[in-house]
Image 1 (tube, rainbow, N blue to C red):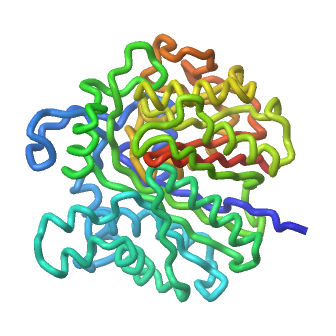
Image 2 (cartoon, rainbow, N blue to C red):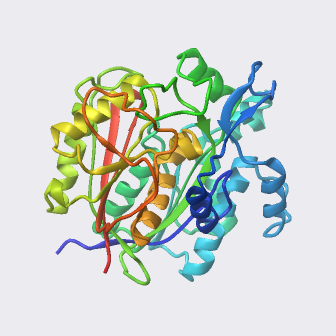
Length: 379
């Protein structure tokens, strides 16, 4: 019999708050972390992004450690994971794994041309630094697959538990807004000159953001309220930065996840989508959802609250979706006004009560990667 897999603990560090509760309160108020920034160290021109205050990170970290050797991203990751490890009371033995998910990691270390900084930019070093803080006994695992990284880590953890390699897996997913990231998206001419508006006719591109999210995946139900019941990842191999125009990879990922979950598509109560507010992504998702008959399922993108947080996005949005499910509340897709895709989709325009028993989380990324994971509420 295949083991059941649960999410027992969640946490997040974002511009909207340093725990899940404060983030949900901000979302219900309609607050957004996306603000206009003028920081020439990041970009010569003013830009919209969702950035966490350095002072808040420093102040929060000083409450749990006096160490000064950690990078800004490492501090954020430690802050997100610390209460989960503390609350779980799980022994970090050979059956407890640690997965770190990111796209760029400590890329800012490369601004200093020293050998030590170059070494610190390696993703395995980032993972080891965070793992060492908590004293994990197992070798850290790095998941870095563009913008599906955060939710892909959940898929990998699920399969590792079902393979009986581990009983508990702690996942941390995070990325920063950096000069490297901003210049890259700007080179694609993909950055919006206003806060992003996913799926909207009047959208002008992506807003970038930074965040860290953390979860505990377990073979034991414990106090869990969510079960992971199906997953799949398909690469459409269409283009280095452009998705398949037919949504083929996303379509197949969702199809496979539904098959493993052993539920029909009409059982899904909510979709937490990728929704980057770029024309190719939004259109591809709408096509894929329609091909699966999901056009009437309530859908949102949280990018209007957080911006695109890269490797953190899939896990952060899962954490928020879990709260949405537990509270039976659909959160608005902030920034949406008038439908701007060729196929009909049911975008959530305002917070509303709803019964949510099953939800789907999707993500897509550069290189053609697509991931879909289905979750079930535990009654």
